[in-house]
Image 1: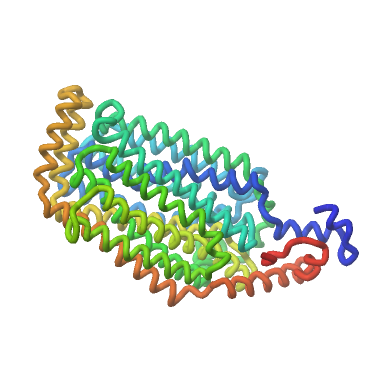
Image 2: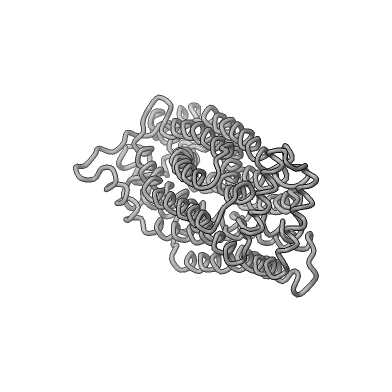
Length: 529
């Protein structure tokens, strides 16, 4: 950089270095320590959000009132997140210190959340005492994970504005986060149910697994904090009387129409995760109470989800974002319809059923990558319209939509389980799991008892559960697709125009070189690729 700037006659070296600092690409160390940091954190998220309800139902005796209480707790906590996430974003937006703008919250959130995660999965409370304890811990989990989540993801758009660089990094960050989440979904059932459960029962197994995942969470996030070279953030804008705190936060969000639309789309898309929430229970009922069935399904899903994350940056060079979106919805519709028809139009087979999951995962992987990039692009949209980036506030909408989606997912799942009478089966399983934990029966005896219990579920329950797994996400994701096409306007051409005008505005306002001057001194412009 210094040699390039020294050789230019059009602008001085100091000014050239300022230009480079704005648009310079990330170093490999920053990119990969950022991306790999997502593995442990998404393992932890998958344990809590993807397996918490299963953990409760397989280790606790619950009646209809308790089941409703669990759903109410989760919904209340997610409503709290409607304020918590943007508030945390606002706090991060105004953080300036020795260790940067994002890193302190990433580390504090990871450590405290990991501790709460272990406490949640090791408590021995039962009945309403557990429900009350669960409500308190759920709230604390929300607060601490928000610290980490918003700090981590709002750092992404702050690392680069280069479109190709952002596409590549976003794809790999999503891929490796998916690897972490996929490992959680695959390994947790294997280690907690059936013949290979740690300690021979789910109670012991979930406790041990929570400790292992908590350690991975902290380790991966420490790697990100130590490895990422965070850009020095400009001083926070001077506070205007009456525009601080919540008022500023809601003003930023309300004025960014594209952010509001993509947030709504992400919420609807995330609601489709209700199908995944029910998948493990369906596999247990259809194929037997063995964790390796769920693990095999999750591995197939996980590998196929990684394909679009790897290929997205290549596809984006040849196809427009909307073209990729059209492909994704075709794969999703085809996969879900075939998933449902297995056992109806052709015989039920585990591997055939899992094969349709490949189409679903690839389609959803492309769709989710597009949504992540789209919400990143609303940061530049905000700067283009207002002159301020506000990354943390804007990116707080991403975890907010995920968490609200998870809460409504739980309401959907508990409703389906209630209607289909699944709780009667899980209460029996829970009783046998606790009897093994208390050494009242052997693991082999538990296996036989659970096999007899599952046989009472009947074909109707598995049929309707499969129908819910297929059609609930299919309808919701299709609605999200229609809204995206109709309302989200930041395509590649619009983004290029915004970046060009932002570059000119920076040069004018900060006394820095224009994009043409940057090119003259050999520095790559934002959209040079």
